[in-house]
Image 1: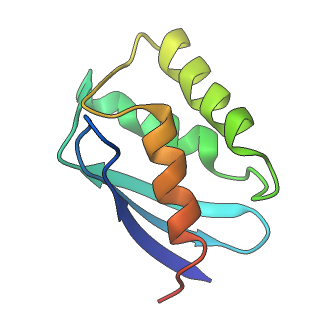
Image 2: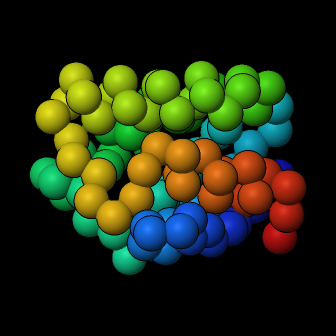
Length: 96
């Protein structure tokens, strides 16, 4: 299945998620109005999300994203792990 969603949490920028999935994430692309520094490191977060089961709870996914960001010295500017998870949850509920 495929899904797409956009989410803007209060005080944050727009984040968009395009995802292919079944019971796990097969492929994910994260885009939007936010910034990531260094920019090329957004791929590291996407790679970490590939293969995770959709049954993981939101807190576990947020912790995973934050761990990847911390270990890779990645700064999310204008979004948070929470907004990525919120967009992911919307995307996996609205197939296109």
